[in-house]
Length: 217
Image (cartoon, rainbow, N blue to C red; front, side, top):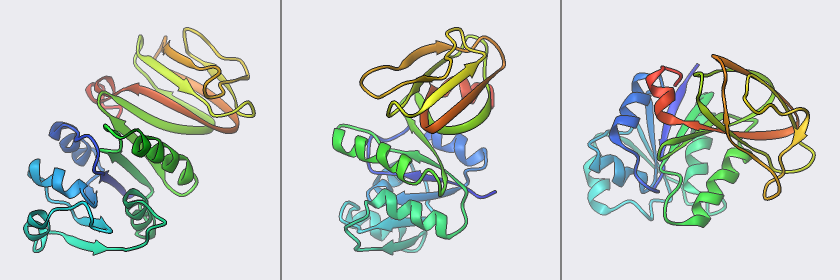
């Protein structure tokens, strides 16, 4: 199973987060355009830099010319993150962690959340922002947890129903339509939870540090 880390041009993650991911198997670092500027500051060398290259600085291009493969794609119907994901899919990656996808521009944040949905059937995407990690799920899944861990659940519409086992506040074939209802700050009571999701996708948000400490990512 091939895994990659995609670094976008949003709020920079801590270098320790990227280093941890690279050690845990997400070993190919792909920079989406201006994400390469962040990589340079963090003294990281991406395998691929891809995008329309309107955000990357001249200094960064020169720095990585002999170190990384730089791919310029002018397609304006795709964002740079989409270009990076399409490259990963074309090259048989099955899982990608997305970093730097949130920040001070709310439109970019919403766009990247939409991209997680758009590519859901093509590649597993894990989005990390600050101290949180977001993973979309559907169907029947079992997730390793830490007793007492805070977990939140967000849906999109009334059609998607979720049933849970192993949570302090269980859900029984319930919808969590965005802006109407959610399950924020639920709590795992044991070392695993079971989810049954029908009719769509649920976003599951967890605490990044807990997952790192317990080697769950």
